[in-house]
Length: 283
Image 1: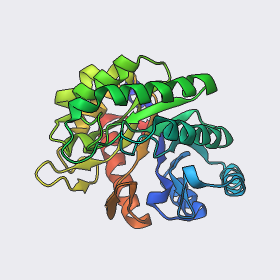
Image 2 (image 1 turned 135 degrees about the vertical axis):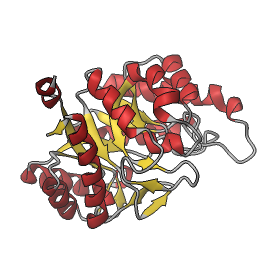
Image 3 (image 1 turned 60 degrees about the vertical axis):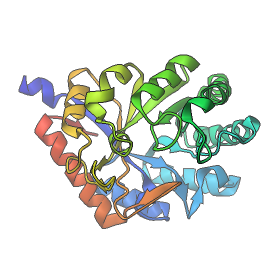
């Protein structure tokens, strides 16, 4: 049994801009922590959707020279009010798909839209599904994979609505990025309440934890995110994908978060300790 567990390996990645705005620093820290991949959300304080062609080429060249592959493009697609024109997000996704192609990854993180204060979440369902279908259609056409993140306050922030979303859209280009901390922040016990129903669609793991009473993000295993239960189940049912560190330990805001090199390292070591106890290694 021990040898079987030791054969389980996941690919370690991390949100580079949680470390530093400079991709050179991002790569250096991630490599020092044993990561072979990077998740790209921004570079030089510029979000991926706003990188111009020269910046994009420079970033791709820099990553290639460092031997660092890209696990996913952490886009802001769908992190807008659902009342906005659907074509606006389709146009932004078209640009993000180009970014992902240049960075040589099919994976693009997306969200399922905010709503204005006082608007019932049930009332936006049809508009959300229409928009997600348009995004999935474009991804299918271009060979991309949209990874929906269960962000707080979007349509798909609870297991039931995430399941509704992915099954109603029904596209092979729409899969799930699982985030334990985000579930905690909306009052969900991630493993207990959501794992079994969402596992068939889970293709990507984002690593952070949170305290239920306060919503504060903490290193993996130090909160109420049922990380050990989740990681154990993933190990046992054959998960072999990415584990991407997104610590959010210093700053958290609408478009992401920041940790800094030292605190990012603390988060990485906490996660490594959990995996070591489970007999899972990273590459």
